[in-house]
Length: 140
Image (tube, rainbow, N blue to C red):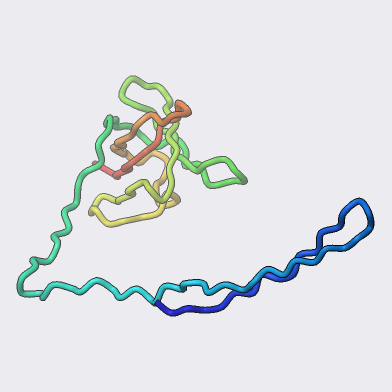
């Protein structure tokens, strides 16, 4: 360890009789840790490369027809409103966490979903009671 010196300063203490008492605080050595070396890497031959596995989102799935795509406005979250199989309008919030794909399975933006498109949505209900879309996929 490398030692550096730290000078704290001089402290002045006043008493009730207007006499001034001065006490010097002695500088003390301070231990400064050296830069920590990075852990040594195992050789590539002995450690297999991690495999990336795509895990489908876990939640409830619903299908329906896009009624409206809601853009991000102010602090309101963006989202999508669909008409489900029962004919009810259901709103889902979306964000960067939402996987959004077209008919070919290619990533797209929420604005690319058009009114009247059929979609399958996997969602969860978050702690605020909102339907949070984990996946929005255009289907036939």
